[in-house]
Image (tube, rainbow, N blue to C red; front, side, top):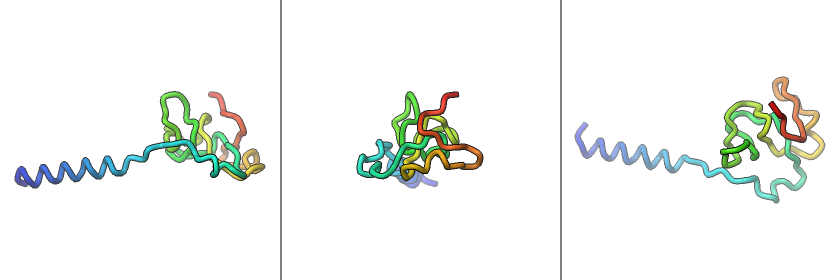
Length: 95
């Protein structure tokens, strides 16, 4: 591989990486209409928000079923949800 090809390959890789970065933001208020926050059911990186200190919000949970991250679910369904043995909670789960 010559220097030009290597440079273009590296530049392309960097551009792809930067383009694929998702900027996490809180779930818009209009998406919360008819929904409630359900803690402890989100899979790693699939939370809607509130993943704890040092995180930027949506998509930042670091483990499956992280107790301080939530998913928006239809009102009245959270506490009946059972995701692989993890029950949904209306408040953050400690510990």
